[in-house]
Amino acid sequence: MELFTYYRSTSSYRVRIALALKGLDYTALPVNLIAPQGGEHKQAAYLALNPQGRVPALRTDEGALLIQSPAIIEYLEERYPQVPLLSSDLVTRAHERAVAALIACDVHPLHNVSVLNHLRQLGHDEPQVLQWIGHWISQGLAAVEQWVGDDGYCFGPAPGVADVYLMPQLYAAERFNLSLEAYPRIRRVAALATQHPAFIKAHPANQPDTPK
Ligand SMILES: N[C@@H](CCC(=O)N[C@@H](CS)C(=O)NCC(=O)O)C(=O)O
Image (tube, rainbow, N blue to C red):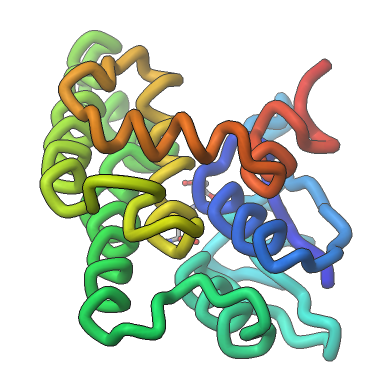
């Protein structure tokens, strides 16, 4: 498989964690979102693959090109079920998917690069942009804190899809200097995941395009 990825992209990071948890090999094809001559994701070569001009995109072993991290992660779950990322219990699966949707639909899109640039174009200064980011991330994490379980990862002893979405969101929170003090359950999950080899492998600090 080939993954079009950017080291700091939280959507790419989700897919990297899912691949690593499942022990799947892939070639990383970095797409520089902040190249000085203009982001590579907006150039014709990449737009021909993904007309939305965003990362990640995954080329499967069979040559299909997939976009949108939730669709890619579901594909991986169905195609490579050996290490499941969803519980066998239907209600727990719904809880896990709720965390994924909360982050992917209600938090991350509000602090995506293009959304922040649009705020700047509308005249908002950096403190206002940071306040916007902090508002939405904090609101989302406060809800996740109430939703996850009392021990282990988000929903039990093994990492699953909720953790796949949560850890990149925490990376974004850290990037924007947001405190996790108010979220003890989330901090417990983070303490476990930061020691897990799959999460370490997928981390933005450990990618081929990470600035040295
Ligand atoms: N819903 C998409 C979001 C993808 C997305 O927004 N990716 C960001 C990086 S995390 C991106 O490519 N941003 C470029 C831009 O907004 O111009 C997914 O989950 O794959």
